Amino acid sequence: MLLVLMFRMEKISVGGENLWVIGKKNMAKASSFLLVLISLGFFLATYNLVTSVIHNQRRESSRELIEERSQDPVIQMPNELKRSRGSKRPFHVALTATDAPYSKWQCRIMYYWYKKMKNRKGSEMGGFTRVLHSGSADDLMEEIPTFVVDPLPDGMDQGYIVLNRPWAFVQWLEKAKIEEEYILMAEPDHVFVKPLPNLSRGNYPAAFPFFYIKPSEHERIIRKFYPEENGPVTNVDPIGNSPVIIQKSQLEKIAPTWMNVSIKMKKDPETDKAFGWVLEMYAYAIASALHGVQHILFKDFMIQPPWDLKLGKTYIIHYTYGCDYSLKGELTYGKIGEWRFDKRSYLRDPPPRNLSLPPPGVPESVVTLVRMVNEATANIPGWDSR
Image (cartoon, rainbow, N blue to C red; front, side):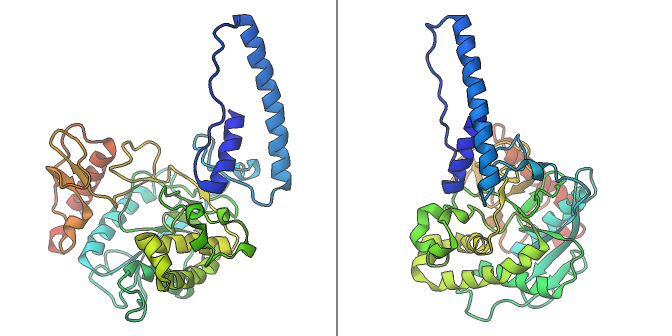
């Protein structure tokens, strides 16, 4: 088992994929007694070898690979960081948003579940801010704690509104008084499933690894913004800026670089074409690497229905994808289903209260999402009036 983890760690550091190196051998002809002796000897030899290798790697490596916990072996966490859990370390929840109806109803649902989970056992959630980058106040100012910042100058985002996100964080960090030493960068379409602890450790922020962020497969483009003298392209983590729990002092350094890299990438036609709607995510990963910041890749941070079927140990449901099913409970992705929940169906008006639940056979993740949306809309005052 230790040998598997060692190779898994090495593989993740270069490409984000798990590498399994121990297979099953056909030993049916061996006697039971001999099999036990061979297995025991192999285990002891492997244990000693791996213990020695890991010890030397930890002592000599300048880039230790880390993991949040043994039950979630994305990357191995050094023992000294495992022991670093101590006093409560609250983090400030921050999400960037526009004043469009589509953004506003998502923020209201997100804020409802934040309030419900904030003071429960295990939570280290602190304050909350909707960083509104429309440049002016809107009608949610009294309902949701909001800090208004300016959008990018006209035309600079080239229709890619997400480009305002790093610029919004730069302004907020410079101007706002933030009590907490840590920040969770979240998004309006996040729903807290359970109380969220501070998943970061030491100088390692915690982030969710996205399967479609693959720096190693785009090395030639990445090198335009992360030159070879900065180190291997594997220093660029397979992440976006959200969800990420990070020290405020680290984000204050990263945010201006993130903004500048995002704008440069958008202006480069080849990069813009290659990365499309995830360009700003790559920009955050590159900016972090330029500052020598690497993240704990925590796969239980969130799930994304309909692809993730079960809740498992997750903390956040991210409902960025449409959920389309037949009445038999069969996924019809790419085709409008007989039953569906897709946030893009509600661009101008919020979803109505009491959405119909999915038909039998639809995964737990989707059922839970719809139930949580229904609970929020049933309890948010004036839901149908905005």
